[in-house]
Length: 445
Figure 1 (spheres, one colour):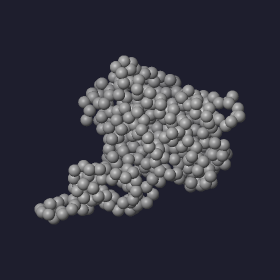
Figure 2 (cartoon, rainbow, N blue to C red):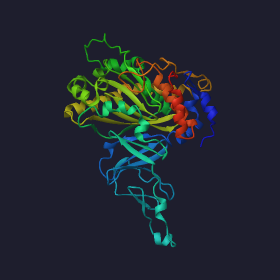
Figure 3 (cartoon, rainbow, N blue to C red):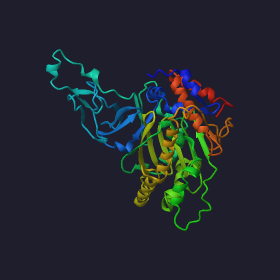
Figure 4 (spheres, rainbow, N blue to C red):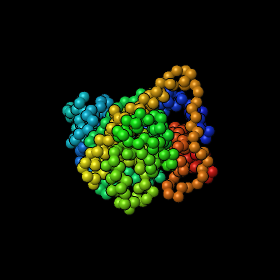
């Protein structure tokens, strides 16, 4: 447990005024507190369910800094086991993914079944002549594991709310990409991974709210994506759109028009999304969601979904100033094969490890981290103040607290509100009371 005092943390993050200290991205004590109070309690996106389709299939991931094995059980359910031997702490499985009938430690040979129960200890009768209670030494398990529309989540905290309660209004928005198409979504290939020299919150914050940066950060990528001879007079991205934030810290920005999908996914995929499948999408998820063409959402703390691109990612907090990004690509299972392949290829061209947009984002994220290495760069706070900060009431079409413009920092403030509540609250009841207070009628956004 970190020795960072709660009062110290509160002094660094004032989202009623929209003021944030650089220390929240650089302080090792805060990072250690996050591992315990956020990643030790929150529901965290583990992987798409398609990563582990059959019994015995496993996927190795992280929750915070803890290595976790996500494994499909014989009955179709999913468990998440701490990847650590109960004898001397060796990593139980080193492979990224695969299929196992048993999990055997390569150090001393202790062996567990896929449910995490200890089944075998070499020379048990000799080394434990008076008997050994194997039932007491099963793998440490995440307290709750659940799946929503093909995404697997887990939490270490048995007192955490259910997954659907944790998602709150964000579940309604998640249905936009995950339930839009008849037949659901299909995993296209496996996981892609790369490292960015930046604190995890810098990355998560962009996807929770920042719809403004493409006009500056991605101008080179946008120009490079324009077909030869095309008219660039309509290149400006739309100011229209919305931004959603929630008490749980989830948030997103969305557009219902604009050139972004044409330039990145291509005409054939855009036509399938906006024209071919539109009527069926309206029937499945309603017009408001069917009209969303592009959006990015952060599921607090580190799950990211790019709508339109069908791109899923998790941001792993490797250290206070380094993150590892893991991504998956989905396509509509019922789409024509050439559409599915184009969707996956063009999304990766934009947001893969070497993607046109991804490399520009990564340069900004790592640049932000570099500016905070010096004594002066850590001293002066940042302004998180864009957008109307007074609650104007419900949106007629979209649930939760929603702005009428995409260009805002409402969702960023919601993200950091929840970040602070999780760090400074002893239990979920305290967190809920704090969220209810800030969401009271007329409260700050």
